[in-house]
Length: 467
Image (tube, rainbow, N blue to C red; front, side, top):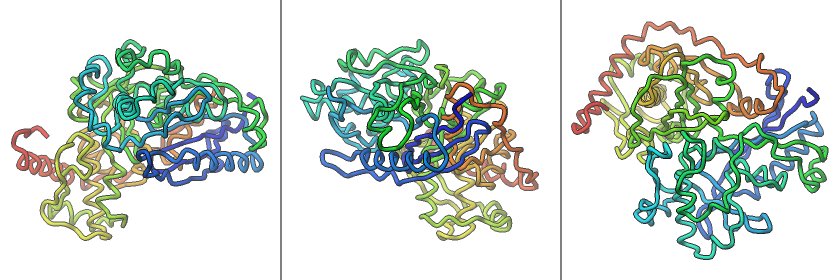
C-alpha cells in the first residue's frame, strides 16, 4: 500500500484534534489539540468552525512538512449537522446541541417525530436529536429552509470543506438523530415530514472515499492535490470499529470522553428502555448496535471541581468502609438516571482529596455498569478514552459486572478507528492490553458498596426501586 500516514481530524465536544497515524502499525506519530469553545451568538450558541478550520489547515501543513500525509480521515461527535447554501457555505451557524432552544417547540416537534421503534432514537433534551435541531431552526428562521441547498452530517461538513463533495454517513445518521431507520438502513419518515428529502445529502458508508482535496487546500497545506479524503465516522463508532474488525462477540466497548457511550456487540436480547438514555447506534458496517450513555467526562469534571487527585489504596478503602457515596445525576439531563438531582450520602469528601477522587471513580463505574446492564452486556468490557487510565474505575467495573475489563490507552482513542477506514490499514497491530492485574482483595467490599448505592437510590426514589 502506497499510503503510509493518515491525518485524522477528530472534533470532540471538548477539544478539536488532529492526529497523525502510521498505517503500518496504527501508532500515533503526532497529536495537536484546540479547545472546542462554543461561541455564544448571535444568533444562538454555535461551534467555532472557522477557528477550527484555520487550526486544522495549519496543523495539516505542519504534519505534512514534518512527516508526510498520504490521506485524511475524519471523526466527530454526533448530534450535529450543517446546513449549506447553494454556494456551499453555511446557511446558518452550526447549532451547539446543548442549547435548550429546541425545547421551546418540543410539543410541535413531537407531532412529527417518528417512534422509537422506527428510529431507535430516544427523545432527548435540547438539540441532541438532530431532527429537533432542524425543526427549531426552520421555525425560528422561516427563510432558512429555502436558503438551504444541502444538509450534511458533521464529519462530512469537514469533508465538504476539504473536497467540495456533499455526503452524510450512516454512523452519524444513526446517532439519535431521528432521521435514520437503523433496522432498514434508510432514512426515516421524518425526512419527508421536515420537507428535506431533496436536501439531505446521500448516506454513505464511513470507509468510502469522499474525494480528493480542493486546489486551495493543497495550496495552503502543501499536500498533493490527489490526497484522498475518506467519508468519516461518528467518534464512538470510531472507537468501536477496531473491535468489530478484530474481536469475536460477545463483548462491550465503553468509549469515554465528554460522553461515555456503552455499546454492546452480541449481547443478550433485551428490551431497550428509551427513558434511560438507551438507543440504537449504527456501526461503520451499517449494522445496529444497542447503546447507552451518560455525560461521564462532564460529570467527572463537575464532581471533582477540576481538582483531579489520584487516590491511594488507603483512601479507596476508607471510602468503601465508611460508605461515602455520590448519588446521580451530576448532569441530570442525560444518562440512565436523568431527571434526578445529585447528592452525597454518608458525608461529602472535600474537593482535591483522594477520598473525593475515589468516590467519583466508583460512582462513574456504577453508572457505566447500569448502562451495560440496560443493553444486555455479555463478555469482555473494553474501556477507551480517559477512563482507561482510571484504575479505581476499572477495578469497580470489574467487580460489579463480574467481567474481564481491559483498557485501551491510545492518546486519541478514536484515531485508530478512523484510520482503519482506509483499505489496507494493518489491523494485525491492533491489540488490547491485558486486564489490570490488581487481583482484587477489594472485590467483596466493592460489591457491597454497589449494593448499598442501589439501596440508597431506592430510598430516594421509592417509585423505581429497581434503579
